[in-house]
Image 1 (cartoon, helix red, strand yellow):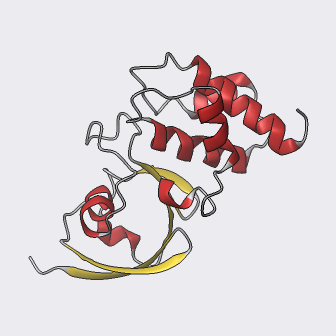
Image 2 (cartoon, one colour):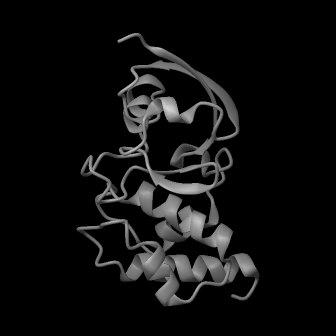
Length: 159
Protein backbone atom coordinates (compact mmCIF):
# COMPACT_ATOMS: atom_id res chain seq x y z
CA UNK A 1 0.00 0.00 0.00
CA UNK A 2 1.21 3.48 -0.80
CA UNK A 3 1.57 5.89 2.07
CA UNK A 4 -0.88 8.77 2.13
CA UNK A 5 0.17 12.40 2.54
CA UNK A 6 -1.98 14.01 5.24
CA UNK A 7 -2.22 17.71 6.09
CA UNK A 8 -3.88 18.55 9.39
CA UNK A 9 -3.59 20.78 12.44
CA UNK A 10 -2.32 19.30 15.70
CA UNK A 11 -2.30 21.42 18.85
CA UNK A 12 -2.77 24.55 16.76
CA UNK A 13 0.18 23.83 14.47
CA UNK A 14 -0.12 22.93 10.78
CA UNK A 15 1.18 19.37 10.48
CA UNK A 16 1.94 17.04 7.61
CA UNK A 17 2.75 13.36 7.76
CA UNK A 18 2.81 10.19 5.70
CA UNK A 19 0.91 7.13 6.86
CA UNK A 20 -0.34 3.80 5.64
CA UNK A 21 -4.10 3.79 4.88
CA UNK A 22 -4.69 1.29 7.71
CA UNK A 23 -2.44 2.98 10.31
CA UNK A 24 -4.18 4.27 13.45
CA UNK A 25 -3.93 7.87 14.54
CA UNK A 26 -2.37 6.64 17.77
CA UNK A 27 0.44 4.97 15.82
CA UNK A 28 0.90 8.10 13.70
CA UNK A 29 1.12 10.29 16.80
CA UNK A 30 3.56 8.02 18.60
CA UNK A 31 5.67 6.64 15.74
CA UNK A 32 5.60 9.29 13.02
CA UNK A 33 5.21 12.51 15.00
CA UNK A 34 7.02 11.49 18.22
CA UNK A 35 4.05 12.59 20.35
CA UNK A 36 4.16 9.82 22.91
CA UNK A 37 1.80 11.34 25.49
CA UNK A 38 -1.21 9.38 24.24
CA UNK A 39 -0.88 5.81 25.46
CA UNK A 40 -2.07 2.50 24.07
CA UNK A 41 -3.78 0.74 26.91
CA UNK A 42 -6.04 -1.66 25.04
CA UNK A 43 -6.05 -0.97 21.29
CA UNK A 44 -9.81 -1.50 21.19
CA UNK A 45 -11.27 1.79 22.44
CA UNK A 46 -12.16 0.43 25.86
CA UNK A 47 -9.70 2.24 28.16
CA UNK A 48 -9.46 5.86 26.96
CA UNK A 49 -5.68 6.11 27.47
CA UNK A 50 -5.27 7.29 23.87
CA UNK A 51 -7.98 9.99 23.99
CA UNK A 52 -7.59 13.05 21.78
CA UNK A 53 -10.04 15.56 20.41
CA UNK A 54 -10.87 15.65 16.71
CA UNK A 55 -12.65 18.82 15.65
CA UNK A 56 -13.67 19.30 19.29
CA UNK A 57 -15.04 15.77 19.72
CA UNK A 58 -13.46 13.34 22.17
CA UNK A 59 -12.21 10.21 20.36
CA UNK A 60 -9.98 7.22 20.98
CA UNK A 61 -7.03 7.60 18.64
CA UNK A 62 -6.58 3.81 18.55
CA UNK A 63 -9.95 3.55 16.76
CA UNK A 64 -9.27 6.33 14.27
CA UNK A 65 -7.21 6.00 11.11
CA UNK A 66 -4.46 8.53 10.51
CA UNK A 67 -5.94 9.32 7.10
CA UNK A 68 -9.10 10.54 8.88
CA UNK A 69 -7.06 13.43 10.29
CA UNK A 70 -6.91 15.14 6.88
CA UNK A 71 -8.10 18.72 7.26
CA UNK A 72 -9.08 18.21 10.90
CA UNK A 73 -8.18 20.04 14.11
CA UNK A 74 -6.62 17.65 16.61
CA UNK A 75 -5.67 18.29 20.22
CA UNK A 76 -3.43 15.94 22.17
CA UNK A 77 -2.01 15.96 25.68
CA UNK A 78 1.15 17.59 24.30
CA UNK A 79 -0.86 20.72 23.50
CA UNK A 80 -2.62 21.02 26.85
CA UNK A 81 0.02 23.08 28.67
CA UNK A 82 0.96 26.57 27.52
CA UNK A 83 4.72 26.20 27.25
CA UNK A 84 5.96 25.63 30.79
CA UNK A 85 2.61 26.68 32.29
CA UNK A 86 0.43 23.70 33.04
CA UNK A 87 -3.27 23.73 32.28
CA UNK A 88 -5.27 24.12 35.52
CA UNK A 89 -6.37 20.47 35.26
CA UNK A 90 -2.77 19.29 34.98
CA UNK A 91 -1.78 21.40 37.97
CA UNK A 92 -4.70 20.12 40.06
CA UNK A 93 -3.96 16.49 39.17
CA UNK A 94 -0.45 17.03 40.53
CA UNK A 95 -1.58 18.91 43.64
CA UNK A 96 -4.21 16.31 44.53
CA UNK A 97 -2.13 13.26 43.54
CA UNK A 98 -4.83 12.26 41.05
CA UNK A 99 -2.41 9.99 39.22
CA UNK A 100 -0.20 7.06 39.99
CA UNK A 101 1.32 5.00 37.19
CA UNK A 102 0.41 7.62 34.57
CA UNK A 103 -0.90 5.37 31.79
CA UNK A 104 -4.47 6.70 32.03
CA UNK A 105 -3.54 10.28 32.96
CA UNK A 106 -3.22 11.79 29.46
CA UNK A 107 -6.60 10.38 28.42
CA UNK A 108 -8.22 11.45 31.69
CA UNK A 109 -6.88 14.98 31.27
CA UNK A 110 -8.05 15.27 27.65
CA UNK A 111 -11.49 13.92 28.57
CA UNK A 112 -11.77 16.24 31.59
CA UNK A 113 -10.70 19.26 29.52
CA UNK A 114 -13.28 18.34 26.89
CA UNK A 115 -15.95 18.13 29.59
CA UNK A 116 -15.08 21.51 31.12
CA UNK A 117 -15.09 23.16 27.69
CA UNK A 118 -18.62 21.85 27.14
CA UNK A 119 -19.87 22.23 30.71
CA UNK A 120 -17.87 24.49 33.06
CA UNK A 121 -20.11 23.62 36.03
CA UNK A 122 -20.56 19.84 36.00
CA UNK A 123 -22.09 17.84 38.83
CA UNK A 124 -20.11 14.95 40.27
CA UNK A 125 -22.41 12.55 38.42
CA UNK A 126 -21.70 14.36 35.14
CA UNK A 127 -17.94 14.17 35.74
CA UNK A 128 -18.20 10.46 36.50
CA UNK A 129 -20.33 9.90 33.40
CA UNK A 130 -17.99 11.90 31.16
CA UNK A 131 -14.90 10.03 32.40
CA UNK A 132 -16.57 6.61 32.30
CA UNK A 133 -14.71 5.74 29.10
CA UNK A 134 -11.35 6.20 30.82
CA UNK A 135 -10.17 3.29 32.91
CA UNK A 136 -7.72 3.59 35.79
CA UNK A 137 -6.32 0.60 37.66
CA UNK A 138 -4.40 2.58 40.29
CA UNK A 139 -6.24 5.52 41.85
CA UNK A 140 -9.79 4.39 42.59
CA UNK A 141 -11.06 7.48 40.71
CA UNK A 142 -11.92 9.58 43.79
CA UNK A 143 -8.89 11.87 43.53
CA UNK A 144 -9.46 12.25 39.79
CA UNK A 145 -13.12 13.24 40.27
CA UNK A 146 -12.17 15.67 43.07
CA UNK A 147 -9.43 17.21 40.91
CA UNK A 148 -11.85 17.79 38.02
CA UNK A 149 -14.52 19.23 40.34
CA UNK A 150 -12.01 21.54 42.08
CA UNK A 151 -10.57 22.69 38.75
CA UNK A 152 -14.04 23.45 37.41
CA UNK A 153 -14.81 25.55 40.49
CA UNK A 154 -11.49 27.41 40.28
CA UNK A 155 -11.87 28.07 36.56
CA UNK A 156 -15.34 29.53 37.24
CA UNK A 157 -13.88 31.63 40.05
CA UNK A 158 -16.08 29.88 42.61
CA UNK A 159 -13.29 28.45 44.76
